[in-house]
Length: 137
Image 1 (cartoon, rainbow, N blue to C red):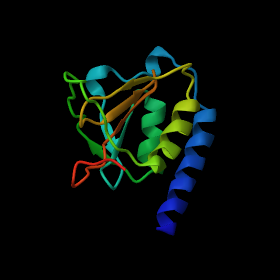
Image 2 (image 1 turned 45 degrees about the vertical axis):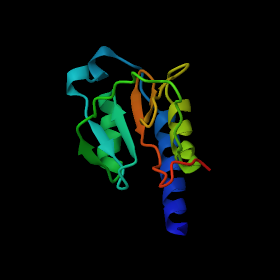
Image 3 (image 1 turned 90 degrees about the vertical axis):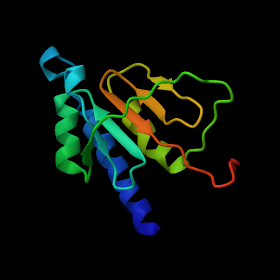
Image 4 (image 1 turned 60 degrees about the horizontal axis):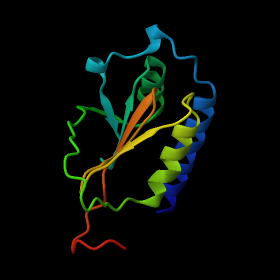
């Protein structure tokens, strides 16, 4: 357990440093929507979809991620929307969002669907934790 937390802290520190040096968003640095791919962590819980070539290069060179097709998610039924997510993932996601050039982010969710955080530079999909009895702690 301690190794996981140490690795998470190391990754957060690396991301904070890297995003502070994020270059200006220029047309030639933006990945076209039809060319976007996701990168999953080894636990298959969080997917980062870089929208710039700069971020894509960082993810593929410095992190142990697997290229994955982006799932198509439609959020039709929002009644009774709730999900359960590990707080540890917020430790990773929030610094990443705060250290981009965006002034804000969008958040999408749906009943038993992943959360989607998005800025003009990155989209992050976070899978909910499945509860065996349907109860949330």
